Amino acid sequence: PWHVHDHSRTFHMSDLLNKEIHDFLNYIRPRRYEHSLRRHVIHEVRKALTTGVNAFSDADVRVFGSFAAELYLPTSDLDLVLLSREFARTGTPKYSSKQVLYRVSNLLRKARIPKDNKVVVISKAKVPIVKFVDAKTNINVDICFENLSGLTANGTFRAWRKQYPAMPALAVVIKHFLELRKLNEVYQGGLGGFCVMCLIISLFQMHPGFSSGNLPVAQNLGTALMEFLHLYGKCFDTSRVGIDVQSGRYFRKPAMPPPVGTSDTQQARRQYFLLHVTDPNDESNNIAKSSYAILDVFGAFGQGYDALERRMKEVHGMGFKER
Figure (cartoon, rainbow, N blue to C red):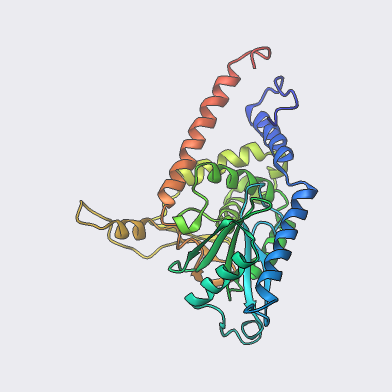
């Protein structure tokens, strides 16, 4: 549906892919009314959780993630966090218990915000969340609690956008690629948006052409996409190498015995191949630690590379009229 321009006479396949990516980005970019809808959902959730009987009157609801970074897709989740004044002031969580999650669930239902009055409480995740679909807009909403990491990351996004202006474009393509394959939900082992951006930034830092400026990414998004899919889908060894975008380098992971035979548990295999991406705002934190399906994610990148390479060879062999 984004094929509104005729690029059939483009000779180089990387240029053709670059043009199609720009067409796709223009097609999928959020419109003004979509911004308004999401702001309305934020307002309604904030009102339900911070005003009225049994509400969290000493708290606020803040937004982070792809919407705050203006990198969201039309189908992206809306990421919110409930913060108490005490936590914001002292760092001591006030609203982080399991009971709080169900209290939030009840308040949302009372306000008739969730679609079909359904709320999912995920209390056993490393970052407990409440999930629901907004009844009026069909927007998926995730709420976490007493966690500043997402808000801190908002500043990191803004700095990266300034330093790497082409990063958002590539991030939108990769995020959509993962969403189509249901590999984007972190609580299901997928790769989150922040981690995707770190992988992209690392590519820009480590690739000689991109880092030197000899290959401007904005004019070579097709090449950047293929390099991304090839690096992480074909070459990157998650069992041995980690990523640190703050220092702009790779690092060697501590040696672990590889899983052998059927006696090794699935957990041991996941731990061995677990991707390590150092949090640029907290060097003690691995932001990919919950992405236990990373082999599936990187496998999908490899398949994507093969499919694109195969299709580009087919198109290159066609005449202009056949394309």
